[in-house]
Image (cartoon, rainbow, N blue to C red; front, side, top):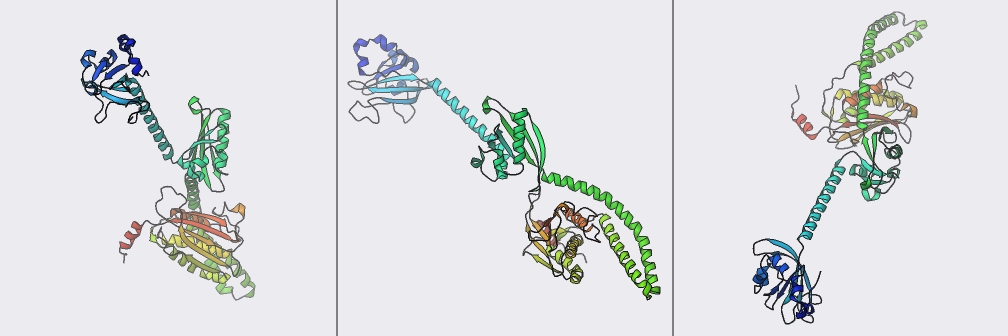
Length: 507
């Protein structure tokens, strides 16, 4: 930018040189009236050069309200913020016809008073800066929207390079890893966690880069009991700085449990129909056999030769009766009537029902319930039967003098989908030998039992009742020895409890 100073305005320079300047040139007196305006300045002001002379500069080109034309003081005087006698400003100037334009103004004092000002039209630059600012704002907005959308996806997502280092991951993936974005970006995928789904994700990234394609796999983490579906897709381009792999990690544990439950329900339904039919057919001849045995005992029971045989046959008939009753219980469809009730009361009733068995084997049964437990929607008879089966099983596996504990507390739902509200957790612990590790996956299978004389139906019935109540049950071994059955039941919403309390009992 050419700055015109006093020496350049010497008479010998010539009017032609001033008229030929590419910038507008204004010379004003000490009252800031125009003394000279070159043709370029007149064109900017949209008036003839001669018409500009004598006018106040602010009347020719008006700066915004409250802003004055630059008026630097001569060097050595009160500079008013000017540096070296020159002041530079960007102004949006208004013409007499109402139009406006952006100008860059260089002002310097004139010898003898007044000012010399060079005025350059910077409208195109301003428009370019405005367009650039709008583009930057649009890009910032788009990036923000993309980030919000990326983080709003509940499925864990991550982006990694061919070296398997993370370049981006959403909030769900951060929660899964248990750390925030700054602690995760740049790390290898396997550093995000030692088990699944990270191990499979790293293998998928290597496969996608090596095969230049996509792949989906399913995996199960035995340590956490969670199942995953993972998909990896490769993309590359100059904007991504090389190969990138997008990995989607979907937790399908709930779906897998539902599928397993449906398959088990179908098998149990078919098996239940079969065993119920068999039990019904067997009960009639078994009743006849029992009646004949009673008649035989009344006639010959006092004879020493028959006494031992009678006791043996009666024990076996009783065992068959118990088995037939369990088969009927297992085979009949559950017609649950759910009303809010207290799990601690149902557990206490079940413990009382097991008192005779426990006393005969010298085993103590204790029910420990945390105070203030929420009510549970339950079929009272079904829940009592389930607890009684669990306590009976624990008593039968406990040593003489042992102790069976029923522990009830508020529980966590483990991320059960669609479940609002609380849970109640129950544990039935014994001091017996515990489960064999290879048997843990089979303890709820019908007719599976390691106990001599056991039918293998008690725990199957318990599982069926618990799942019909919307809960879950699992078997495990206690670290200190013995077995533990852990169940989880959904608590009743407060509105249901209040409604049940307000409903009068049927006389």
